[in-house]
Length: 468
Image (cartoon, rainbow, N blue to C red):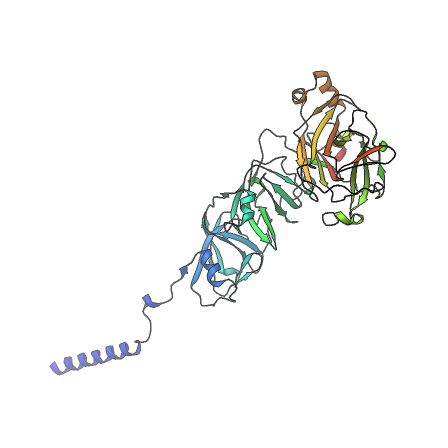
């Protein structure tokens, strides 16, 4: 019996030695590769521009999605994820359309992916299964001015930011194409995708704050809208839902508009106290194709017509100008009017060949104020503040709300004058600028910077019956 026990014990020890010997090169569970989270900043630093990441990589990143597949204002196979409130962000490209929404928390395996570093860094997934939603989260947008954003002192790209009070321009009053947002410190582009859910809606007259995602495409910095609800407007401004735009495209290039009414009863009349019609010289607007003005081709569209205003006056003052009047049936019930215009680079104007003095931004700034009248050369009051345009070759959208009766009285009308205005509105844009040339041709004439008018917009709270 003792021999049997001894033999079994020896056999067991031998077998144990053999098992141990066979497994001596296999890692223990503690030695196996464990997935490891890295920051988006480290992902960019370690892997940007270094080719395809190993398919065996154990690294992953996490973050919160700051774009929205449902709003469709980004390519349908891309989303942007940010690593915490102060962390960096990156564009993620999937193999097919995805469904990640604003606020989704995601986990992304970097194995087999690649970072393409061009104007913006894009991480391309090896497969769509590498990205998964693991919950929801919140990113608090960092407040920044356009000036600070463009200075590049912080890695703003692919992160959520909040711009302060300002206004949009472009798109003829609608979320469409490339808009410009100006917050007083500078301006930045905001792109609206053709497929965006809010494309074609009217944007606010002014903005309290605007939260968007920063992108850089080529040399162009943008703050793109994530959701329309993240563009906040003041509560006391009218909610414009429809805009009528006169863009002058029905006018034939080469037409001289001077005192006549070529479309919708629009007339152009000088602003001097002598009340000359423009065909007498003071504010001679002409319809011009963008490709026929060599000095302005860089900022005009080739196949589009514009109004050019050459302010040529018979006056002995140091300034000249006049209003562009709008008196059409469509003004009734309007709550907003805007003009899109720019200072031209032209230093001569048509049949007045004198070369103008060098443009001085301070001395020759164009001043624009929207005015209301009780009729043709009736009482005039200012409906808004004077806006200065001290650059050339850049369109500015000057928007003014049209007051109600109480507001018109505050502007300077009497009660009866306010009633007269509301029943037959006359609105003008007074354009005034300092002279850049004085010369004599059949009397004293003076020349200022030519003005390019792109469009006039009229906004309504409700879509008018005539627009249906």
